[in-house]
Length: 151
Figure 1 (tube, rainbow, N blue to C red):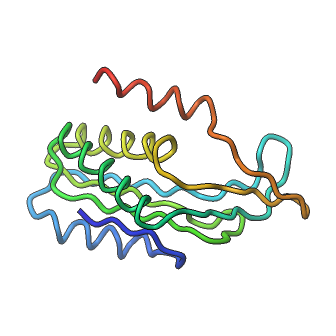
Figure 2 (figure 1 turned 90 degrees about the vertical axis):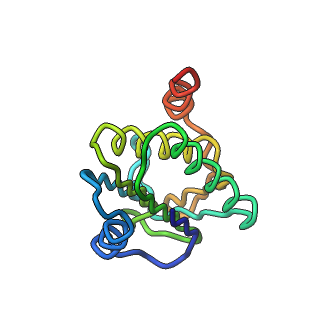
């Protein structure tokens, strides 16, 4: 399981190749890449600033990945979350999961992403035409994460 919090961009193909090399015999690979939105409703977003406390963030990401590993049979996981100032449409997060079967890979990937949105200690500020606003957690993200509580 590889977890990184970094400022630099990542190469999706290279990261999936590393995941596959770490998971011989896997029958499924699911990779999700999240992008910085360029719109929030009707408001144009030019950039997103992400802040975090490194030790706390890395520990929580490790806990999220470990919980996914306890729920599903996973051969390997690669999780990369970027921080700093990111322009609209830049890659912000990669969740890549390898497992023997597609169900486990899809479910674990979705679980990790849902918990990243609700449990990971990142603070986000959207820049829109010179105005900067802190982003609150969305109700839809909380609802998505809540469904895993009884599963």
